[in-house]
Length: 460
Image 1 (cartoon, rainbow, N blue to C red):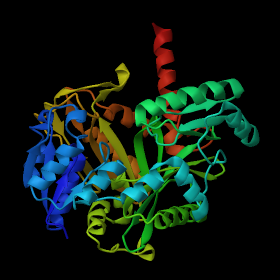
Image 2 (cartoon, rainbow, N blue to C red):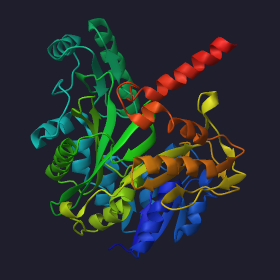
Image 3 (cartoon, rainbow, N blue to C red):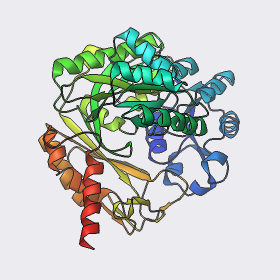
Image 4 (cartoon, rainbow, N blue to C red):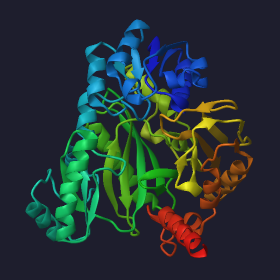
């Protein structure tokens, strides 16, 4: 096991890793920016190192400063958390060159699965269901139109190295496809330094279902069943739950097994999430593989009892997975609401500033992952997520009731947060029933908000 782990991240995920490291007998080192110099999570680290000004480009994204901090503090491993450098294969390679263990997949596995085109190629070999579409990157509009003719409109143009909705364009005819191909390539090149795009079939009304997997350096791989992340806005998840409700157990097991096979075939070590879209007939199509721990990992921890962060550290240290597939089962239902410092009534405007009131909920099977406390000043430099509220119940009905109660106990002020929105969403028929009539798909929240905006406009 490692002696010291440097955490190349901030906020709640940094605190989560500190706690896991402590339980494993490892010391922790936190790097931080000047904007985070008063971050409460730093108090829990054994050592801390300032690596630059507030902007992430001058601190959390500076590979040279992070490596220097690791060498200076004699850290033998680096955990990237999520975001920032977590899926940067070059960073993982630099760690290896400096004899510092990267707690995550190898640079080769990360590059292989991080590129959506090579990932789809591997998925086909593993039997993981994928969308029909182009097998390689496409530059020529005529070639794109030929693919669209074969699979039928609508189609979607996607960046091979993309994520978060960037480098994506939906096309319903040849003209839209030609225009979308050019704009997607341009946006992808600017956002990711890679303008490669591909074309695949687009699902109009899809659910977002993902499979949590773990792999080790000994060829082992398991899945921890699935989560539903359909409740999202502009490709950003709002509510996650597990297991994904309404999925036939036989279909679920087939898809989960195909996901773990994909991870195993990639010689992958660490936590990975294989993301899918599912239609109303429960047909699955792989979207991508996230080669890092996910924000929503607590959902899976609550229903399986597997500590994903600790397991990832053990795996990076060379230990085999501590659980086998037949030892993993689903216990009840869990739901997570991301608590963002944003004002939903003002276009989700970020709310930096001092948190004067911060009272978290409690009770049976209620978990709050956060770095915030009363008096904490939220800096304007980073993502607006300030915490995650997770509940567990014997079944989905109990979990929803428990989440409703927990939200009512969660008081944050004077800044605005997404908690009131979550209180509403978990009571909407689209969420509670997940049925076709209420069109529960990845756009249901946006349709609800658009209807609110139209009603407000009509009343003025």
